[in-house]
Image (tube, rainbow, N blue to C red; front, side, top):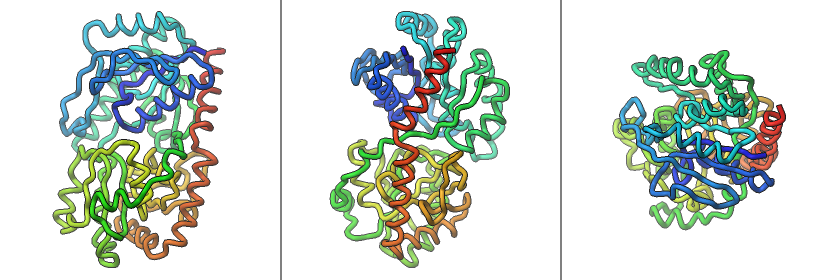
Length: 392
């Protein structure tokens, strides 16, 4: 097959959808398919690049101003005079059998969707992010954006949608009714091997942590992953483990947790690491006593990678988060109700109190990732869907 992969976010831009789209593109190529990636320019990366068996074309982009509405996130758009001409030329020369888009609210998705509709090329769209904001003042704005800007172009080319978890399933059915051709349930994929083999001493020495229990939290801090509940759990945790430290690894786009930490007097227990190279993540995972990466309600790539590394995970999620895959509270993960800081504190304390039992649960979580979430398994499912679409 000739597969065009489309995502405004693509490495060197970091983030879950960027890394997943790159892994899938490389996987498609490794399986013998011709792959073109269309992305937005970012960070001085070359406009045209060939590597790992794929060709990457990055179109000139501009960044949305970092406002509260945009959750201070560096969102890239490629819309400018000539974008339609560029997309038409690049896709016309490549002649894809199918287009795999990532992100429903990006202009490259809309432009390539319009091209695919005109050329009768099937599209598969992976919906990575729910267009939501927990702040009540923005709730209506995001619903309106979904209704007026996202749903209409989606309805024009009616892609099949990749659904990654039960929350996304509910969101899609509520927001995009009659705007898609069908749903395929494929969880997010991870590459477990790269998470292993880290040196915990490097992290402990870098941040002067000694033998302190480490609560690791990986991922950019945005409103849907604000770490506030995690910070509110700290007083109870510190009462039993006074030398415990919370390491926040990722860029802080939303500072509510920092303000809450000051109010609670726990800033001394928080280490704001910021963005680190991907090659450093295994060292942080190896050093962690427990990982808690708040995803609003649900689990994302960073949490699954922590489980793949054999790290005990405490997370606000439902047992049915992934359709057909069982999360077992206290069996392969510790689950907490959304916003319940006491429950989160109790689970973190349970992990720190009994490291041997925590390791048993972590190994069960690691086995779950190997069984259901490896990139090979996820790649197989994507190629099955893409092949069916191309055949139709």
